[in-house]
Image 1 (spheres, rainbow, N blue to C red):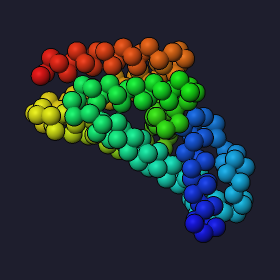
Image 2 (cartoon, rainbow, N blue to C red):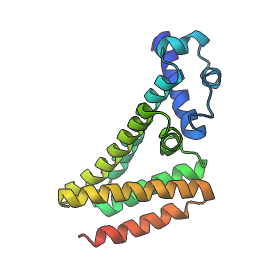
Image 3 (cartoon, rainbow, N blue to C red):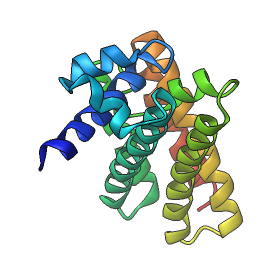
Amino acid sequence: MNTKTDSREKILTTAVKLFQIKGFNAVGLNEILKESNAPKGSLYYYFPNGKEELALEAIKLASEFIEKKVKTSLDKYSDPIRAFQYNIENIIECLNKEYKLDGISISLLALETHLHNELLREACKDAFSALQNIYADKLIQNGFPKETAEGLGMTIQLMIEGAITLSVTKKDTSPLQEVSKQLSILLKSYI
């Protein structure tokens, strides 16, 4: 990797991590530069529109990472109930290491920016929609009618995001464990 691309990637991956852990408003550009060890002038070279452009790219990168992680989890099992349980087990494992949202959710960014930055709100909306679609697709692959799968995809997204928020707040993964149990009951009622 050449130095220019390397600096851009270091800035971006550092921003992803810091924004997911601390939020948009709590992270300054100087902190990103310091943490990434990137030259000061490189941030505006790669992200001429500053923090907003960097955050937009960070949301997209985080979303792609989370989507890939979820797809990999869901693809491990053909049975949708077991696949969703496995996905939740992976989230629990990540949270048990450190109660941080890094690589798990962009909810902190979404909640923090939705009122004052339409561009970032849209990017977060797209990220959440992509996850909903991944959940719905898993159900469609298993014979669920499209309309039912789409509604359940949203419901699953709501349950998991809510449980992540409660788990982080309580420093206890029991909300995610409960979602896993209730999700099994919910999906069995449709089979």
